[in-house]
Image 1: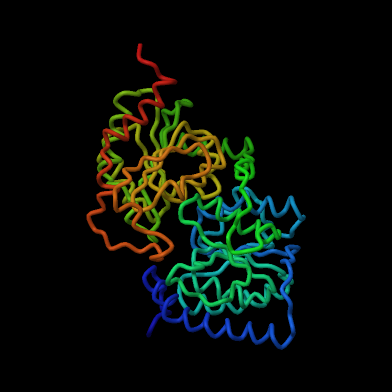
Image 2: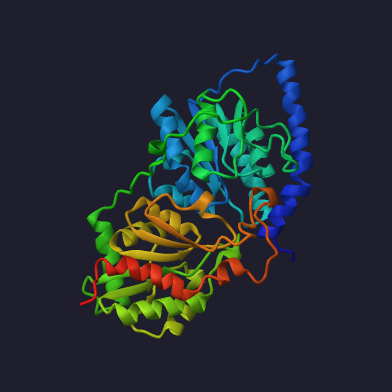
Length: 414
């Protein structure tokens, strides 16, 4: 018996190109005909019931939060969100969008996805969505969702005079994507256009840095107590010593972001040798437990424990709030930690911290090679580089030096 067709990253790219391009072309024509037949005149977006779409990036659900809050504060907008089900928990950290206003799609296979697209159309009509803001960088699929939403105003990124990245004229309030500024600035520009502050695709309205300040998560004593109990289970000898987190994983969407596991182990071993007052915790999902265990075993120290699959997703933020610092690949946890005061050292390789540095207490470790960044909106974040010198070239000695400088402030030499 044939199983349901599974969607992997490369399949998503191919479908978005070969199915997405003709569909966006057809929908663009249909939307133009509808506008002509109904004599619809262009008017400012009605942001009273605004839907944000960001399907595939958990970190972006955090980064866009200041923009969503600005829309809520400025015009008392009712905010909705559409996201893949596997990424939806990232919206719970700050609870800016009510659970009943979040639509989740299954990305496991094409049949589930097709069913959920139909449900999405019904859900949008039920909630009378007036404006949709597409946060994705030139995805034809999300542009199609914008068209199917029924919203009269559709705000999203445009390539303007750049070649390629075609997705029709579905977006009727286009904003030129600027690849030279942080993605949070680009997201805020989408909201500025929604508010009527930009009258051309060029987002000329300045973004106030104060508007980009990320809110902090609210953490209860019960949450921290539950996390402490699990830490004690992992390491019974723990007596509230300082915690250092090691996140050696990265999303399968871009595995090239992963620093070498033996480098993580080297840095971990060095920290434990010089700082006997700390406990190291390796984090990860249940599926990543074996990968994480390899790092822990290579480090070879009982004060380095594997917590992959131990902490629930909702317990990550309380764990971050209890910890002193985290060393991580450029991945979701770096952005989740931004809702706390945790110091985070983020290893960047194929992407640029100029665009994607987390908005919290984060510090980038980045070589900035002439080829970096090699993934971007223009190539749909695809790279075929196998040697990955941008990330493998980051030496563990350099990383430890940065961490040591930070730790020395609290643990000075006698």
